[in-house]
Length: 246
Image (cartoon, rainbow, N blue to C red; front, side, top):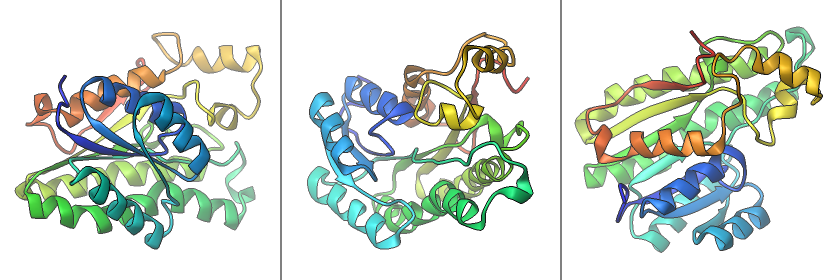
């Protein structure tokens, strides 16, 4: 029970890697709020796992503020924030990505980290403690062709993690990131362009361990980085990628 007595918000927690993190955190004793733009899915997952639910648009300041207030009202305080909500565009030559697609990717993947910091960091500072985990991607370290602006948004998250970590360390707040390789999540088809056995085999051939990431992999890594076991770890972007970035 490494997270016994801790409280956590997991954005994008109603599916994929987010649900894996929620499941692990609850198993380790945490009280968790699943915050997702799909409110029905958040509530359904929360009911199944014994969590709280909140509908949020992580790219909207008023919505993120309301999420933070709801979390404090329902859980008493916020120990852990997981910035997991993310989106991509389909594999596309960089000049053909529309401005609307670009804005959406950067708003959900990058602006959301700014907004959650704006509305939750002051609370953590007031308590002199906290752990923030940003779910970035191997795409921010070793970019894949035609996922250009998605790659850039995840690189932004990794740099933001390090900048946040060095600024917030004196306040007792640790900030880390995990870099998953693609896994069995709703975004997998978008990364690959099409989901066929041949495309899957080609994709997996680039991962030395020979499989996709799983939600359980992300839950285990997130649990370590947000627990007291990692009390000396901050500013790290941990690759959970089966060797993809070697």
